[in-house]
Picture 1 (cartoon, rainbow, N blue to C red):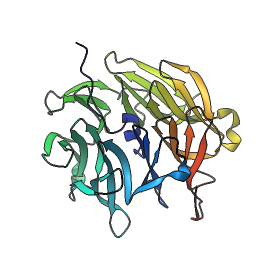
Picture 2 (spheres, rainbow, N blue to C red):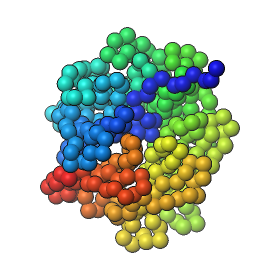
Picture 3 (tube, rainbow, N blue to C red):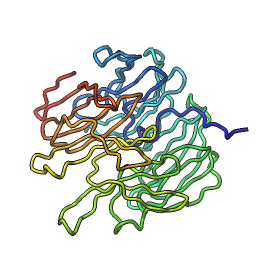
Length: 348
């Protein structure tokens, strides 16, 4: 008898940690087309070989963080107060044909749902409560796919971030101290399994992503030899605690199907801030290949992957917000949305 296969997951770990604005389900891709001024937007879908121009709206609700289970698309709806700040979040679901929108979970006493993971027949999610001058109080819960049978799995002081639900275990880390933990799906057996807090003079760490027993992340450090800051990209093996530096000048990354897709500054042309979108094999990071370099002057970027397409959300000197898709071989490129710094909007 072979090892048990993991139950259905709603989206990849790497997409989830990168705002989850794209997800693949069989031959259908669901993605979020941003609304003016932010990452939240409306849900659209394409099927088969359809291009962006054939995309069909699934929901006009403000959405972020997509996952799929059965015939339902799950998403977070951030609810804002009169000042425009997010007061709390609701986890929603809608059928793939756009019908049957339902509230799954809402907690008005917490500012927002941090992350959620669909694993089999349950949803695992984290919520951080503010406790005034004492800081934060983090909770990890689980519930059925319809929002019933809510169970508290863990509660701790501090800011804890979920990394993955995999191999019948929940992985999470302490964002204050960068200690890595694992526990069973029931919440029992919690133990620390690693730490990132001794790495390179305790820099701030970004986009910690769990993949197949390794943690990937980047951090900003001062390069004393060059007298400038640079983003360094690392892989940390949980079992051996071995740390490997993979790249420098990383802006963003996504891991899928044995490949790393990442945005990278071109230091040979610093004057115009030239930027490239690259890919490399996980087992050989030196196999770097350019996917696309259409947009220079990038100031921020998030990458999602669905099927054979990368979905890129970024800002730059030229655009306040730009959302485009590019195939993993770089041959197909489509602009989905762009917003100028002046506020005028053009939809691709």
